[in-house]
Image 1 (cartoon, helix red, strand yellow):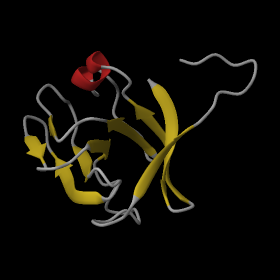
Image 2 (tube, one colour):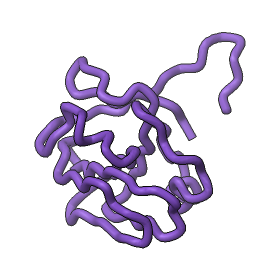
Image 3 (cartoon, one colour):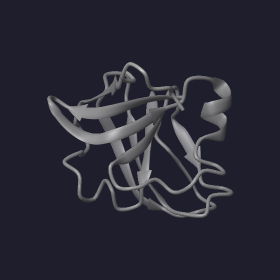
Length: 124
C-alpha cells in the first residue's frame, strides 16, 4: 500500500490515506485491520461497491466518479452491510463520523497525492 493525503483543491481533507495497490489489497480492504482514526482513510480503486461483512466497526464512505468528483456519501455504514454507487471509479473508506465533520460533500473534486517517504526511513 502507498500512503498519501486527500485534497479538495489545495485543502488537505485527510492527511493519512492508504491506497490499495493490487487486487489482494483491494479485496482485503480493512478486514482484520484496526479501526481508522480521525484524519485517516483507505482509498480503493477501481471500486464501486464495498461490504462491511466481517468488520467490527462502522464506516463512512465516499464514492468517487471517473472525474474525481464525489458522487455519493454513505454515513455510518454498519457491519454486515453493503453499499455501492453506479458509475463510481473509487471508494474512500473512513471512520464513521469522519465525513460528517469534513468539507467533503457530494460534488467535491478530490485528489489523492502520494506522500513520499523521507530519506532514511522505510515504508511499512
